[in-house]
Image 1 (tube, rainbow, N blue to C red):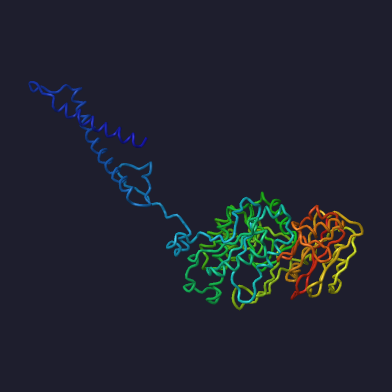
Image 2: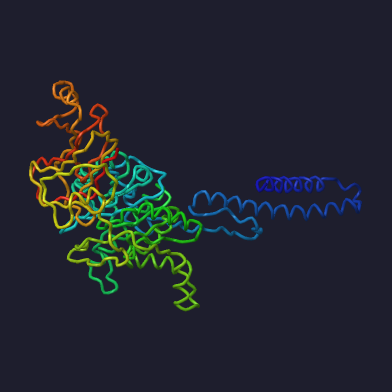
Length: 526
């Protein structure tokens, strides 16, 4: 319509001009005066000629401005209510972007593309757990943290969860070593896509030496907290399209065995309320759950002030900006903020790392609300006679563990040590599960240990021993080796029907160990 009006005005101006020219050319016969009605028309057309010239000049001016708009960036079209005597052309404000807060990234366009070292591209899960990890001078807790998170997950829970480990280092050798450690310790979880490992571009981090010291913190601490802001923001940006909820963790925590179901149930219960985050731990940034739809806004806020304050302070400032009225007292502000952060009790995550990622800092904080962790999983097992060459510690006997009353804790195993379950009558075992180690003694596992069964039929044993094409390995005393403990301390599976029914099942240590051994779960399911 705008271009149609311009064309019509131009046409009108041209017609007026031609009409006036024609009237001027009419001869004045005999010097007589032009008739009054023709004279009136003549005067009107003269006025139209003047007005048409003005319109033509205004239109030329507008057309010139339109041409300039195509050459000059950040210029909008003239406003629809522009009058003929204005040249109002408005500039568009620059749109905020990460390059505003991290200008060094503009020199490397791919600097925000993560390096996915391990990953199957899993999406559409209910929960995403983000774990940043860095190179520590003293001790790494990452494998223990992952073992704790994976310890009690069911099959369906494992399919509805994604754990992202962000190796926040640019040393490619170190990144590769962390990825390889995870591959070796958690092969099934890596293959299924439950575990991902990512790392930043070598250009992601700015020059930390130019940071301004604030709040009395040393240069080293300012660098540490600034990098933490950048690390958490990177993880959030990567995770925003992976699932429904995102949970921020650290690489030196342990989780309660029912953490997944507790978090999902509580999040669904609170889904209709306007919270910004749910707290499943009272410490720092551990166990904070966000809707993934809020992550872009949160990460942008962190990046905007990443050089100024620690990340837990910045999170509190988001709440203040959202709901606090400067004209009211702090009590009202705290009440309003409490509506946006819901606390779940008891806490589901506990901080266990003694050595902080900040060099030289000892981190002794623990969550008093975490409570006592359950150290074993109880099952109802079939009647069996129990024997073992291993000596148990204090009251942690094999008998109590088999009955689901405690965990079995044995002194240092050596090659040839065993645990034997002999059944009064041959039974069909549908499934078995032996979990070694627990949250508090995660290193005390059964290493290089096999799971073996004794078929009740001698004919079956003879066939397996003599058959050259048999897929089973047979021990010298007729037991069939069906599995071995993984590095995570877990041995589980089903028993082939060709071996059923079985008279006995045993665990055999194949090499000397450097540590004690815990069996926190014994399941023999018929």
